[in-house]
Length: 122
Length: 108
Image 1 (cartoon, chains in turn blue, red):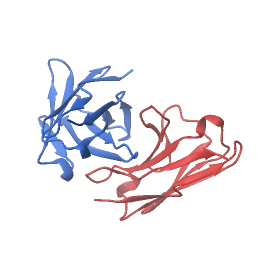
Image 2: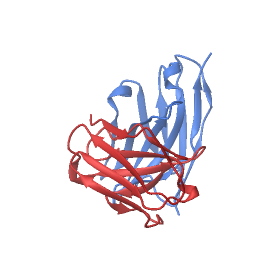
Image 3: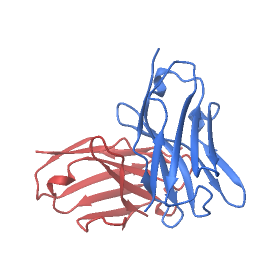
Image 4: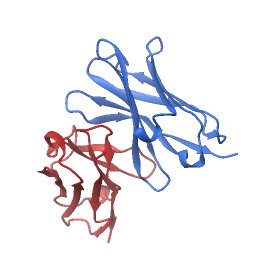
């Protein structure tokens, strides 16, 4: 059974960097049959896919255009986890952030972390 | 990017009734890579339907999905009290993956 456990601060100051980590159990971040994603949900409820990391003979990433200049998603194979860094945050980045596995069997986003409310405020 | 528009925004029904939720895409969704998720307050979204019409693991058969191209439907045949929640459609055929804005299913 796959579990994703998120950690990281819930309050970030404007212009600073948002950093979250997602620890994986029951699967491997290096799996050839899954991708590891970050999705956020705004206070109004809208869901936005931010990006992903995955391994297919080499590591690769894809990012949403809206955050591409500010985002890094990176794996840590030694700890079996992956992380999100979002630079130069503004109050518009206030949201619940989820780490999510997408499997390559049916391509569903099947396992979600518990969510972290990140508030951007001074 | 593909924009998904869900309707109605809110649906008020009683337990035992049939619910029909719509999701329309701004362009054709590749190979019916369309999913539906259910979200309850304080919880992460849970997958219900993938590939437009296949139920995810553990989802009861009162939930069904249909459609192709740009028009998709989620049907709940007989509403149970635990079905009142927010429902989102999502396309995963093209990057960036996108979600609809959600339909809130509330008790009448």
